[in-house]
Image (cartoon, rainbow, N blue to C red; front, side, top):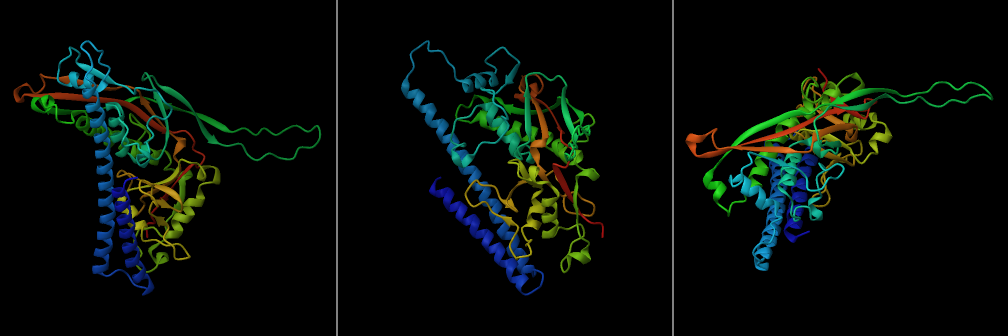
Length: 417
């Protein structure tokens, strides 16, 4: 880890200590934050967010520097005329500029691995390793979807035919003592089926000819970022709140019934001074934590999911021993935690409010995401012929659904009074 990253992480921890000190002063005096203290707390939280952004930008610059170093090393090698060009980036850039006859370009991973949507560890060198255009696009897609960051089970298929996945509705009940020669009691789990389809997500973007022809521009990085964000925003929203009808069955909708209720919030009166309608107290999250049984709670894919504004609220909460239940990652790149479980944010989760399911907790590996392997790029010179720009169309096919409805994921819902 570089000294710069260490310094940023130190500043991040310092900002959190300042925010914590502001809260503790008000708590020791048994009062709410003053307007000045609240502004100070908000600034400290904004500093944390700004530092996180700087860390991400620095890691991205490291990756680009590594790619540039490799590129110039190849130039210095001076390959002989006729050497075969295996550089996928050059092939892609040639297609982007219209130097090939093909109108479409299928993006695929260079190697097929299980769970290839899982995000790499940046601090272990993930951001300095040269990645393909496909990997960079998928990386931006993940960053814009909290569900994809929470380590769901990812199924990658070559084609888009419907997949039938077994669904566990109830587990077997406990075994019983059986007398000698007595018949055994039937004790079977209940199964159903989940169908994973391949819904098509697409969008258009335009690029000027000047940008395409300027070799100094990181064109692949720009297009990967724009496409990844757009696909992540569209697909990611449905992975949270999709209805399951002609779109994915979102993780919150699939687990949003009575069986997924982990904790109903306390009333404002029960919350005490400073209570908020639909708000959360520390005991609520502790109860939600233990509403998920240990086998799911101990899974490596067990985490919290909420939006950023909810995290800001939760950062103020303490347990019965006066300890903050939210803790910052102790090393740069490590996730923040609540009750020692990773915290993932997604802007599509509901805000705190009356009847709002604002927090989801449990084993996200029980939620299946299906994605067709190829991400299709298509180009057109004719669509905006009068403006001298090239139009690119990007298409992704995917779906998502819960395959274990026995209580692997539970939600918190705000009280109505």
